[in-house]
Length: 332
Picture (cartoon, helix red, strand yellow):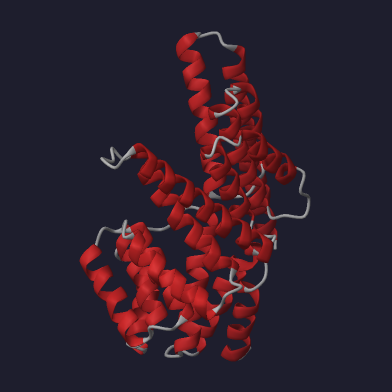
């Protein structure tokens, strides 16, 4: 098969479901093997590796990780590839190489200030660096270019959410009324942007979950509970979204309804979904923490042993499935 066919198939797979990311990596890998210096296939390979990392929730960190090396390869072939610059900057940020990361972002912003994908990732860089003002400036710019972008609305909402949490935690010397007015304004800004994001893209479940979280901050627990119930009843959504819903619903049950039992039920449902993700790892963490806390209070606690038993049972089942998968591939 010629490299163009592998490359085009790779891009097609990336635009499909997340379960196709692994195959996309293989396609771009073959395209690059056949056409080593092709910038598009090399960047496609890097993009597929990045998506696979994000999807699995287990990034491969290190100066010589495959993704880092592939992004550097793209920049070696095309030093002006600004999207590759900011993606590499995000990876360097993970490695605490902040000076080099910032240099790459600033260089990218100078070269292509209106490139939308570059703006998206540069804003993410600044948000993660704690420079929310700069992130907002970039996102607002992106929203002016594409007013109906669910992505930009969602990201702007996340920035206002950071500002809101900072305000709540701060020992501000401002008057109480001024702080309250600022809080109300930030809550409304969060709600507006999260609501718009979900309206424009109903599959963007994270925006609706973020809206529910703002409702809990606003003490509107009834509205938050109604959102979680509606989301839990959705059928045609991705496995990762289901896990995210169970995770956030569990946190709501534990922290706001003070029901450890209902929270554990939600975490268990999220964990039992066989799909590697950050949400699943968090569900597992909260289950293990619950069991540990209960056993500290009572070494014979039945619920704690049930939780641990289910975790081991799911782990064991997945190990046996892996064995069968290996045996089948060996037979082939």
